[in-house]
Image 1 (cartoon, rainbow, N blue to C red):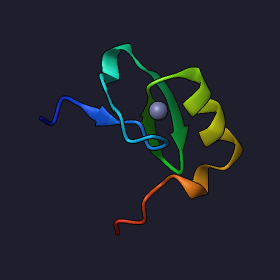
Image 2: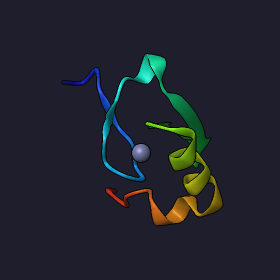
Image 3: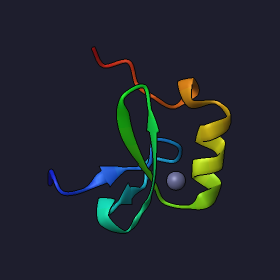
Length: 52
Ligand SMILES: [Zn+2]
């Protein structure tokens, strides 16, 4: 279970090894597609969860 990540944009499960990734605020996020990554890059704060 810890092996998989979720695309923060659409919530789909992605495999970290084979997905697109982007670093933001010291964390690495993984995306299911370049479209989701582009959406994240435009407005990252809309997609990161404030879980602290
Ligand atoms: Zn996605």
